[in-house]
Amino acid sequence: MQSMVILISGRGSNMQALLEAGLPVAAVISNNPAAEGLAFSRAHGIPTHAIDHRAFSGREAFDSALAEIIDTYQPDLVALAGFMRILSESFVNHYQGRLINIHPSLLPAFSGLDTHVRALQEGVKIHGCTVHFVTPKLDHGPIIIQAAVPVLADDTPATLAARVLAQEHRIYPQAANWFLQGQLTLAENRVETGIACDGQKVLYSPGITS
Ligand code: GRF
Image 1 (cartoon, rainbow, N blue to C red):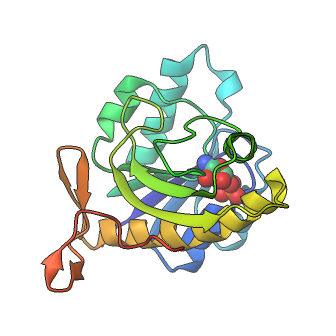
Image 2: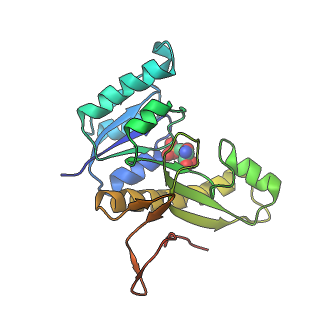
């Protein structure tokens, strides 16, 4: 039986979407004991851990304690869902090819923080979200699926974030499900979904909406 572990730091709405999609979540782990999302996973009987990064001497020490908990579950997939910690290269390499993240922009545009504010400042007409494999370079791993939303004239960061978040909740379960079904293959920097499109395999994400 395939399984996944989810890492969160706060609200946990993407974690909730993954759980509600019926994915085989073995555990939820947060670096923040006060993360709002922990109550939801606990209430749903999912083994839930809080491991406070502030109790560790440094990034490597925290990351290896985190990996120790994750590895007790022997998950096929580790999903970062609003996990607000930069992970060390050794951690990322340990989970190479089975560590995914959701980012609230159409990567490679707007990597990093405050994506919705920056999208509005730049005047982009289309914004969105991306699920990608995690590599040591922040927000730069191979892209699995993206969803696009229009940017409206009267958008604020909050209204734009809400529009993007609704798409996050749609594409993250889709990506995790593809992975766990063995439908994703990595070919250099491209992710093949193996989903037929007009009888042919596609190398772009079929999840783009307009
Ligand atoms: C989401 O926008 C996600 O893309 C980003 O952090 C936010 C987390 O939200 N990485 P939530 O905790 O899943 O509600």
